[in-house]
Length: 601
Image (tube, rainbow, N blue to C red; front, side, top):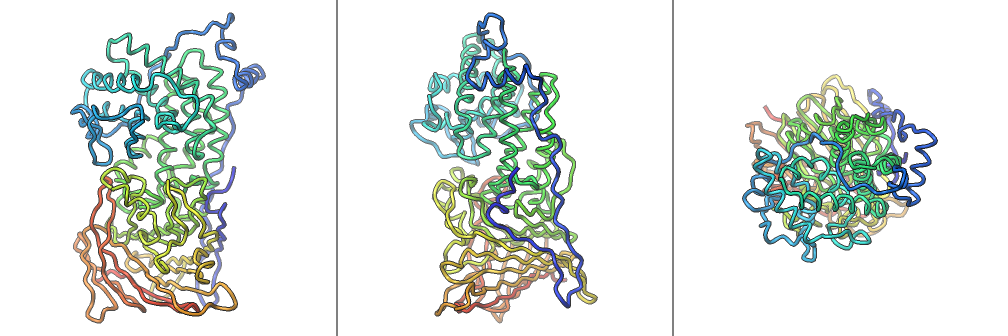
């Protein structure tokens, strides 16, 4: 199994003591071992069936004596393990799709995909994730007619699977794979109506799409899309008649794809918490399909769930909500808690996720999250952000320093035109040179050249007067080629969580420094509801938090200003916030800029 995206792109980590410091060595988080990470053990006969099915021999030839294909049917009912959003379900009953706060009339949706919708709407409509929302908002007999109407319209627009993937949104691998899984999990809702004609159309479409997945499962945009496709194949193999060959084929492919999806600490290679959540959701639903057929879930799937949950928890704040990283927004604690509960994994957050690249430091009520790795490699990125060496900090559940977040939900209440800006370095709480991104931000969620290597050092500090603390030091080379400068950031959080010290250094990356000066800006995007006011000397700011606490920010060098900013909240809504900006000109010979954030009173 490969190392995670951070290691692939070059993270150099060390845990050492500096002369004159009293420190305790902080060991990196122990990577969870994969137990029995292999397809379920099968005999020689089943192995031959799997090979034959992979070679293209129809399942009917492998399971029935005369090779006569049985009519499509579902052999078991699945108990849905993850409820949807009741508000979105109520909107469907009222005649609208509701996606990230935006309504679209069902009657105006082009289910064929010729008139393209925004990506969030395309995912919801063509993956049929809206079925869970309908189930969450009323009794089955009340919502089934709504599902039947939408289903009929979709089937009219998509009478047959396309030959190849990607031509239309319905036939993008991730949408098709999720659609098969959702159709099978929510089959009791779909078939609640006594409509034999619709039932047969759905079953035929299900069989057609499952065959399409068999042929196109290798055509995904990234590893997660491939995992989605394999999950659809396995689910169809479990729950459809004559499915044994497809199940054997799918289990082998799924286990292989899962092994290529994550690093050895369980973080997905896209470094996106949203993708981490999607992977967990897929496996939870697939496990429910195994339970419905009274089959034991393969050990590899249980092991992968055990690996996926701790890294996700490492990006939660004190209130249980999610940090804003790699396109994610501040997803509510309730949503995360429901997902973790459904996974059945009881664990703690990883504090030192080397391969996934996020460092977590907890000081009583204070929580520090630090991006200490390169962005994901282009082939893994979905909403890739130039966020290297950015941080978020919260105290007692109040977010104090944040990233803007929300690039992945652009197309809802977040306008599509803001998507690339939300992925930029300036949308994160880090240092920016000359208004340039530390890693190039490209279209369609991709990223280009920039940060290739990050050095990281983490240790604990002991001091008689100031108390114990955790020190993080990291540097990246994203500005080295253009400006001849390496950005190094040091963060020190006291163990009582009331003081965060920082220093940003720019160090020449060659023996001969370049001449001239370059503009710099160190941005600290502030959490919602914080009122900021500059001090009289212009080198500090007072921060009044919604909970009534008061924090002081002090800047050692540069000009300090308060500017407007935006932040995407847990409901994917744009919220106006403020940001502190330390800015000025720095010599090509380098410079250092210290700052302090401290709770008063």
